[in-house]
Amino acid sequence: MVFFFFTSELENKLQSQKERERIIGVWVMIKSEKDGKPRFDESIGEKYTYAYKKNGDFILDFRIVRNQVEDADMSIMDYPKIKWSIVNKNIEYKAFDSNGRFLGVTSDFFYFSGDTLVTGNAVLTSYYLKISEK
Image 1 (cartoon, rainbow, N blue to C red):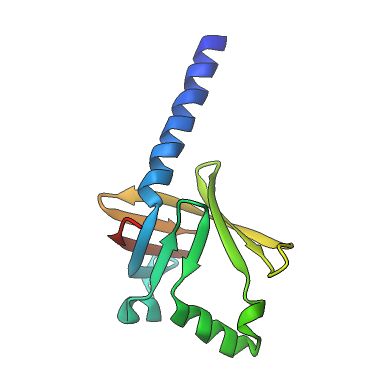
Image 2: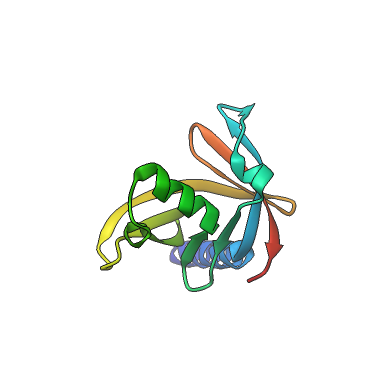
């Protein structure tokens, strides 16, 4: 029994590591859905990039950041740094301010369909293709 538990735990860690390696890179959104129906997302037409870095940084295309900063009437210096990790078979995103203080966390399900990374929550689902390994 203990051996089975250990083997299962080891398999989960290995699977998580494989998924982590597969996510690392730069992605572009190719499709978005809200409640299972097609949804307009500016990211698709503008080919905004989403980068999952090996060091855990999640980097949004600067154009997204610029738009969000303008909409929120805030300084670019106040924009949070986002770290990503895989937790319980979800991608977890943690936000930190410029002083390194934790601001909040969100989590999305994810899976791969062929070469497509699919992420989402109960309402939104996004589909991405990798354009770079870095």
